[in-house]
Image (cartoon, rainbow, N blue to C red; front, side, top):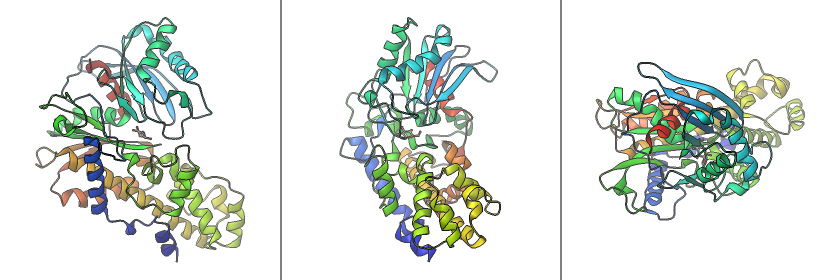
Length: 426
Ligand code: BGC
């Protein structure tokens, strides 16, 4: 009965054919590259993977993520490790109430001010859909992850920050804006080169989700004037993929979000939405009498559920805490199945997304040159059994296509990648 319920709501991944989804992903990617209508913006990053990183030169790094804003100074030390200093972290402006554009930039400048004199270069990892300009500034297309700074939409973020720095008399800076998946891909490059990798993918599943890969310029036909012999990193904005058939709860969750109709794929798998999805799923299961009366009674007092709490339960169903402590053993068995299936679907979709980027990259056709897939994001690494499930799918989906690959994680990938871009892009 629980299975049927999960199938009806399209949470059960058995209702999806991964090979078909990969084909749909590839179709959307092609359409996005050629400028035909697509749910995948396929944004050229104007960043390649060839440049070598200068040593002993500090660069200011800003990492504007879905949850936190981090600012620090980074230096690649010759014959040594990466040096990260003057690290500060605050909640991402706009996640705790609406802000004006001026207030947003003021928060950034507050954090940059103490280190502004140490470098004229800024690598700005901005984890939102931004149309990168050839001068590496970036125009915000729209916000994702429920951030509220509406004035910034349509503005060039690099120009706004440069002006705010000037207004505070902090000098002129060369600012490179890049997406966090592009940063993640660049951060994985050093390790990938040691493996002999012939191409690279950056994938993130955290508060939001997205993918970047290396594409030949000739395939990016929507942009004229690119060097036809070159290649560059493309930000897929894969969270926008809209060809998965959604269930009633997915539709409800989208309607309640700040950007209905956008980021539909992200709303089915990423950290900021999984808690809400789990909440709606448990509430619907309670309506359909899948739980005992006492569990339903306790659940009805609940107004929300964080994915952290849902995940805690999945990791330890026999030691429930919070509202789940009111659930009997049979209730907890149902709950495990419901939440486990949410993870199963997220794992399948994640593997489909990574596989599409891997196939499109054209890399990994020789075991001596495996495709390097750098993966980042708290939801990916912290969700109970998610990474194992993704790997099982990838083994099947990519091996069947003769693609050799290597998945890895680089510590502080967005910061490392933004530093590389900040130091090499001009
Ligand atoms: C954003 C992407 C970002 C991803 C992962 C999404 O919400 O639109 O630009 O790469 O989250 O952080």
